[in-house]
Image (cartoon, rainbow, N blue to C red; front, side, top):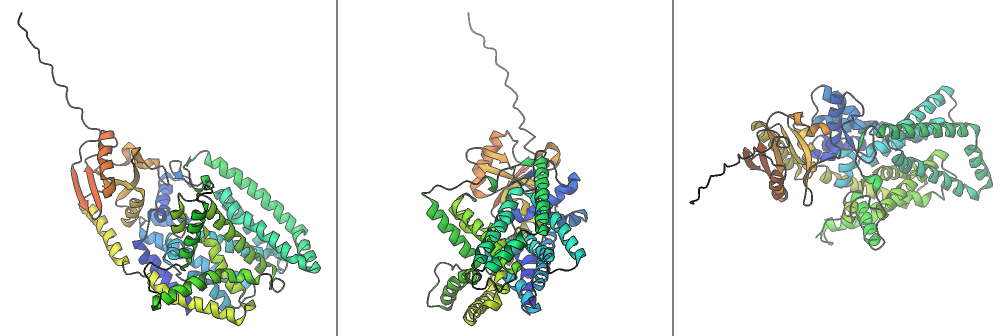
Length: 541
């Protein structure tokens, strides 16, 4: 019943509610899938990649059939995210069953990660769904590790697991070696070191751990893994040489020490916001909402540390895979949280507070840790977890279906219909206002990103975009610029700087001002005024 309930909630959110919060980052999978089909290449040479991410296996792969069918709209995005969510649920179930957990416990592993704890949690994991993939790959790795362990007697199963492990390893390193190191390698060795450290209390356990670690089988697997990672890293950098690259998170530097406390505080606030432990301003403490807010503030963070508090005391009762899973989760969580707290991973502290999404795979793993370690918890801890789960389930629908979502969706659809009615099918807008409407229109209205700047005026966006959009033959019809109020002066300045012809139409719709040109004004310039003939002046002698 719980699984059915949370599945209904995330399905409703994916297919209905998220249309109101759908953004250009989420739309990139649809846009890139179209570029891949047009270029007939897995890595389009005219595409601008960011963060050194090559997107080897991501949502765009599942969107390509929709592009070929001519239905590359929001439903394609939603169906893809729903597919990934189902894959995730199945893998969680299979992994927990491989740990000899009951069917009920295995299903609960899926339930706890599908609950809508906060608007940000839903937006990142079941809206944009970028880092749900990382969690899915982590679960897949853990499942494969389990199949490679000595308890599996079947040689054919171990061979299949070995091959699957190497293929997955190659693809993930090929996508981004640096990100792979942060998300997989560093947590792996951190968890390994902690496992050995905790095993030191018992000589027998310590010797057994070292024996398992130094076994011929594990050394062979490790050697093959190193070779595969080196080959994948070489292939990655070789591919990058032939592609367009923009900057991104890979260039983040350490923040100055004088702003470090503020930056770290905002990272903590971002975490509280992400897990739903933050309350809105103006809540009365004596009200029911105030009491629930205080309970969430106290209980939700506690839920995240409960497994860590029990690792040491339950170390010898847990299987090697269970220990490794829990330690891997916390090491990865700590690494990402420290990066958010100490680096300019986002431009400023407020960004760290409002968008701490990189931590989401490890947060989901810690939620699953509570299910894995349930049998080791005292009755009091189980009651705390049950109360937290009840509160989260009771409040989740408020986040799944907020009051304002229908109105926002209607406005977005109406804008697209207005453009179709006016026969406007190609235009430019700021990044966050561009890809949204391209996808909402099923590709009937192409809106490509531009950027307005006080110092540089208007410029083309070289960030998750395609050079093809800015070429002379990108369109032969009318072209519009969709401008928000604060950029109108910059638009007039751009018309002057680019020597654009006068727009043939200008109108306001919703919050935007539209400038319509007969042809693409980036290439069709204002006609030069004919020079006046000088009059011959006769002077008297």
